[in-house]
Image 1 (cartoon, one colour):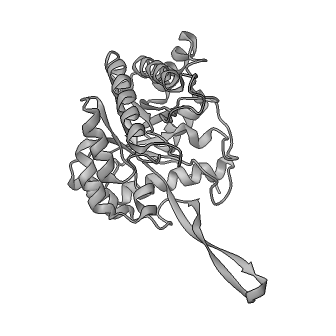
Image 2: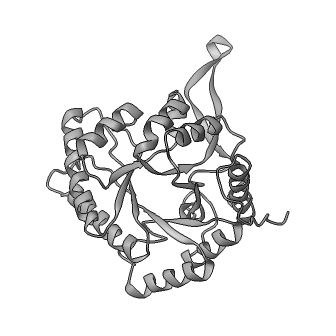
Length: 306
C-alpha cells in the first residue's frame, strides 16, 4: 500500500500546530511518507485561494520533496439546507467541481467527499435520493477532469457498510468509489475483517487513526452511586495503542484485493497534545506500524528527536 499523510493533522483545527502546505509537504517527506492528502479548505487548500501561482508553488514543493499528492479532501454535507431558498447542495457541487480541477492540476486523482448528516425532521428516503442525485452530478463533473470521488464512511447516511454499498450502487458512476475507514465500523461494532473485505473491491483509499474508549459516569447523590453515561468519550492515541483491530481491518482489505492509498490523520484532540514533536512522533509510529505489518514499503523514517 502507498502511505500518505493528511495535512489536516497540521492544520491547527484541534489545537495542533499549524503548518503552511509547502512546509507540511516537506515534513511529510522527511518523516518517510510517499504521498500527501491535502485538506480542501482553509487554512490549507481552499478553492478560493487556489490561484495558478499557489498551485505552481505546491507542484514545486511536491517535486522538491519527492512525494506525490494523490488526493484532496473535500468537506460536504448533502442534507438540504434549513433555508429552502438557499441552494446549499448546488454550492457543494460547485465546490467539489473546483476541487476536482485543482486535484488534476496537482497530478492527483481522488477527491474525498461525505454523504449527509441526518436529523429527526428529515425524510430518510428523500435525503437518500437527494444524496444520490448530488453525487451523480459531482461524479459527472469530476470525470471531465479525470478525477474519482471517494465516499468516506463517516457521516450518518449510508454509514453501515451494507448501506454504503447500496448507495454506491444507486449512484452508479464508474468514478464513484469508497474511502473506507475502520473508525466508524469499529465504534458501531461491525466485524472489521468482513466489512473491510466486502468494501475493498470498491475502495481507492483508507484513512487511518487509532482511538481509546473512555467510559463516562455521572454522580447521583440521592443514590450515593454513579450512573453510566453513553456513549463513551473517544480519544485519539498513537497508532496501534487503541481499541481498533487494525490487523483484522487491513487483512480484510488485502483479502478483498485492496492495494491503494493508506493515509494517516490526526483529526481530533490527541493524547500527548498538538505540538510538532508529538504530531511527528505519532506520524512516525504509524509508518513503523505499517512497515512492521508488511503494509508499507521500507521507506526511510525520520524518528523525531526526544
